[in-house]
Picture (cartoon, rainbow, N blue to C red):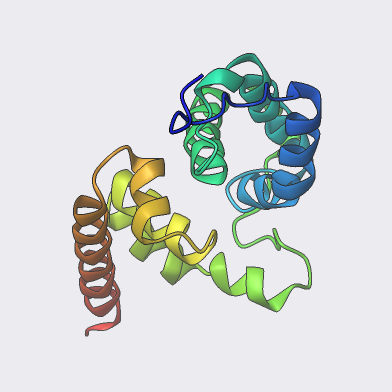
Length: 174
């Protein structure tokens, strides 16, 4: 071995790595899913993402684990929404039924005007806005989740914010 050569990397203990990833990011993934769909599915969907992380552990970047998990979560949620779920007519909620309980913060998020404004900006913009607002991602992490450059992510977030502002203004204009 040459004196200037770097020491070989110690093999990673996959079990310990996976346990640490689940402990560190489990709550964030459950919140991600709870904000985007039925709360009763959030833990199962998070578990599905972690199962994918375990199967693809060699592909998970050590310096960007959470963005990789969020990107995988986006695919998992899209697949989950594609599944056909029959809902008997007598179980369809009435329009305006309380969906988020007594949590005023979540109630505001589900307000009809905000939902309408968010719906009008398109799915990609909505995804970017929610990753930024709810998950706190911007810059490099947002770029990792979107699979684009940092400058591309910054530009996409800026455009999405402008579209949301315009949509909000249009909804409030008489």
